[in-house]
Length: 199
Image (tube, rainbow, N blue to C red):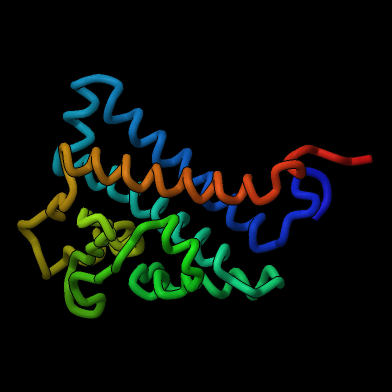
C-alpha cells in the first residue's frame, strides 16, 4: 500500500476502513440519543426506532467484517471481500473471526439468529457477551426490506422495537467501544505508518 497506508497489509486496510466507519457510526447514534429529550423520544419511538436499529445493524456488521479481516491469513482483496459475503447473516459471519486475540477484543460469546428467514417476517440476532450482557441486533437485510413482507402476513403489526430506551443506549455504547478497540489495535500495529508519504 502506498501513501497513507504504506506498510499496511491489505486485510488491515480493509479492517481499519470498516472499524473506523463503525466507530463513527456508533458515535453518531450516541449523539442523537443525547442531543435533547424531544429527539431522543422520537428516536426510541416504535416507528423511528426502526431507523436507529437499521443503523445499529449496519455498523455492527461492519465491525464484524473488520474482525473477520483482522483474523484472516488471506492477502488478496477479492478473497478477503468474499470472506464477509454471507448475505448479512451475522451468526454465519461471527464464526469466521478465528483469531483468539481479536475475539477477546470483541468480547462476544455467541450470536444467535432469532426467526427463520424463509418463514418469519422479522429477524434479529441475540448477541451474548462474555461478561453476561446480551443485546439485540436486527438482521440488516430484513429490516431494510421488511415492508415487502407485510403483505398478507402481519397486517396489523409493526416491527417490535427489540432494543429501545436505556437498552438501546447500552447497545450503542457497548458496540461503539468494541469498534473503537478494534481501530486502536490496528493503529497500534502500525504506529509510524499513519502518515501520508508521496515522496
